[in-house]
Structures are given as C-alpha cells and as structure tokens.
Length: 608
Image (cartoon, rainbow, N blue to C red; front, side, top):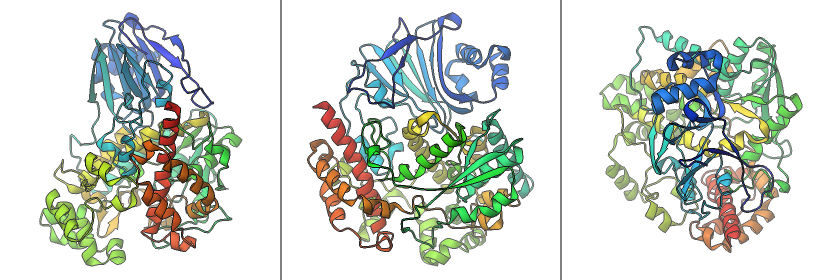
C-alpha cells in the first residue's frame, strides 16, 4: 500500500482459508537511501554487472544496487535486469512508487487505486484484503481467457478495479497519477548475422548454457522437468554439461489405469521410455518416472489446487496432472528449485512454419518449395500446407475474413470450441478476431513468434503464484532475456529449412541427446489421460454445471446451453473423445468453460 506519506508491505496468507475480506497485517518497509523502500520477489541475475552499471559497490548487496540504479536512472534502469522478479520501489524523495515485473511473467504484480492510494500485491485475492479495494467482478475479462486472447487486454482481471501489470512493463505512480510503459519489447531492435551457419548454433548453445548455469542453485540438489521434448531435454542436458554435482529429473507418466485419448500421428505418450537412452548418457542425472493420478475432490474445496479467487485454472484437470507430481517429488527430495523449459517453443525451438510465407513474399520460390517438403505436407497435403503456412498469413485481414465467411466458417477458427456467448464475443470483438498476429515487422514468421511470446507471457503471469505454490521455485532458462533477444534477432531460416521445422533447436541438441529425441516431429500431448479422468468425474461435472446454470453472473458470459449440449452428448470411448472436433469441445468449451463458470459462481456467491 502506498500514498505520499508512507509505504507498507502487506503480509497475507494466500494458501490458507481466509475469510471473504481478510484483514491485512502490514509491516513498514525498511528505508534505503533518501528514505526509499524496496521490495523484491524472485531473483535477478548478474548482480556484479548491475552494480557496475549503477556505480554501486557490489559488496553492499543487490538491494543497494537496485536502489542506487533506480534512484539515478528511474525506470530506465529496468532495461538492464534479467531474471524472474517482481519489484516495488518507493522513492523517498518525491513519494512516487515504481512497480515492475520480469519480461515473461515468471513473477507478477497486480495493483488497484482507491482512496488516493496505490495497492499492489502478487495475487488479486491479496488486494481483496483491503476494504478500500472494491470486489466488483469483471466477468467479461474471462472471455478473453477462454479465447486465449488475454494479450489483447493484458491488464484486465476477474475484478474490475484490480489490474495486472503486464510483464516487461513498469508502472509509475506519482501524485495520484499512474503511467505504464514497457521496459522490454519482443520486437527486435537489431538483426544478428554470422558468417557461418554453425555460428548460430554455437551462440544459441552458449546463451542457453549461461541461462541454465545462472539458475542452478549454488548449493544442494535440484529437480529438472524432462518430458522427452526438445525444450526440457535442452535444459536438462545443458545442466548436465555444467553441473558439478548429481541432480534429479522428473518425467510424468500417464495414469496407468487410464486409456490415453490422443492422436498418435501428432503426439507421443511414452516419454518415460524415450528418455531412458538420454538418462543412460548422463550418469549425473537421476531420473524419476512418476505416474499421474487424479486429484481428490478435496482439491476442489477452499484451499485446494482448483479453488481460486485469482484466476480459474486451465482445462478441467490439466494443472492437477502438471504440478502435484513435481511438487510431491521435490518435497521427497528436499529440494525447492525446479528447472523447466516452458518458454522454449517461443524462443529457440520456434517452429518457423511461416518462413514459407516470407519466402513467397520475397519471391524466393526455391526456398518456398523446400519449405513445403516437410511434415505439414505429408500430414495435410501440399495445397493445405501451402494455404495455411504460405498464402493465408499474407492475406489482408478483410480478405481472410471474407474467405472464411464464404466457406461458412467463423472469423475466429477457435470460436466453435469456446463457451463464450456470441453476443459477448461480438461486443468484445473476439468473434471477429482472426487470431492472426498483426504485421509489425518485415517478416510474418517473426510476427508470429512475437505474438507467441506475448500470449505466453500473459498466460504465465496469471499462473505465476500457482507455480510457486508450496514454497517451490520454478526457474525457466528458456525465458532468459539474453536468449530471447538473440532468438528474435537471427535470420528466419534458422528456424525452418528444407522442410525441417524447429531447425535451430534440432541442431542445438545434436550430439547432446539421442537422435530419436532431436528428430522427433511429434509432441507430448499434455495430460493424455484427460478423458479417463473426466469420465470418472462425469457426475460431479454434471452437478457443477447445474450450479453454473443457476449463476446469473456466469450465464451473462458463458454459453451454458452449449456446455450442457456437449455434456449430454458424452463420448462412449476415449478414442471417440480424442478425435477432433470432440476433443476441443470437451477439453475447452466444456472443461475450460466449467472452470471459468465455477469461479464466477464463487465470486457471485461471495458478493451476495
């Protein structure tokens, strides 16, 4: 809480079972230079380098460096920070306040302005502890979430008077006036070109190795996620190249009692078997294969994994598949640092599918023909691959809409799998949003990578508190700022060449992982046992859906009739459920819609 007279850090327990409006327990921030105050959550890398930039003695510590740098340069100093962090700095000279969070949303900050004061916290529910902060819901904000278009309205939250500070942005509050500006942008300011093709691979490897080394704890063991995909394998093998001690990996296996619902031409579910040759290659890795299990219904109650006043969890049980096995193993191993690679798809393992569009745009027909000699052509056929990745990205917005209208399709290809009322989607412009990235650079493939980064970082920001639940710290080297800057600045053909997608990542991993991993074109599906778990909870889903149908707030945003239709037309088998479009209708329109409806009903009940 900040006003022109004081600055306070508020302590609240976000995990327990607080009352609807808990009373905050404040403690005053210890003042720094000129009466300033600094609060830091997370970690910031290269303290010595920052001290040199700030003109500060590094022996005084990171807090003194940050205070000095911000005092001298203000928000401009943030452009030098790399790491996972959220910080609040109170300038004692003029009573102003600066808020900032890292570029990829690994830590997040929310704020509210009320009664001439600025309130800030790491979760919306903490701000609800202040009676000055209204708890008026903003149900339509969740429509953006269901369409996976939160990056179009990044500040909106489920509460009208609580805003998310977008990742990579700084908020400055001075004399009761708020201004927000970015201190990092994914739009590259330079282009990197090397003489030799192999130089890009060497540079990317070096940057990844540095990012991993900076995030490995100085002492003790750590845990690394390992899914047999490119990103987690890159992080794990980089750690193995650098680590001076043994460490552990975790591979989550599908529920052995469930039948997987997946497309074997696009997905693999045998990750544990696939990582065995990799584990054998690196004796410093101790691999753990952990079976996923359906979370108990107690996780649906207050204080449970799926009960939240901040944001609804994703599709029905995905977070129950993703996090509890990792937390449980980390607890058994007595480690709190977990390395992941969840930003890899937007950085070094970007697939480069729209390099074809760039080649067509520049008249490079031989390069375009080479791009078409890939898995998309074998899977979808030549004409469809040419249309999806070559022609469609180049069409003006109006032409794309006209083409879909003539084909009898909605403007947004995802509209059929979203449980948002059509009138709400039309009012917010979501139904007409094609999902195509805007043209901001000279490359459509770079535009697509930038859009992926923007969507990913908002998605991460809304789940940052969940990822740190239980005292564990998930560190992602693929979100490293220097690595991202490099990946955005190199030529596009480093990502797709001669029909090979993720070209940079595959070359980076050559020699570090078995060829079966480096050359795999399929991906892990993410909770392949989703339908078996949903089927076991079918009656419970019906009860929850009936409760949502009685919530005016939920019904004002959700197409509950469509959700009911999908529920009543329940598939007879996992095979049937796993085929498009049923898989999207069940997992997204029903599953994700149910989680949003639960939260809206919960908010409405609290406000009554």
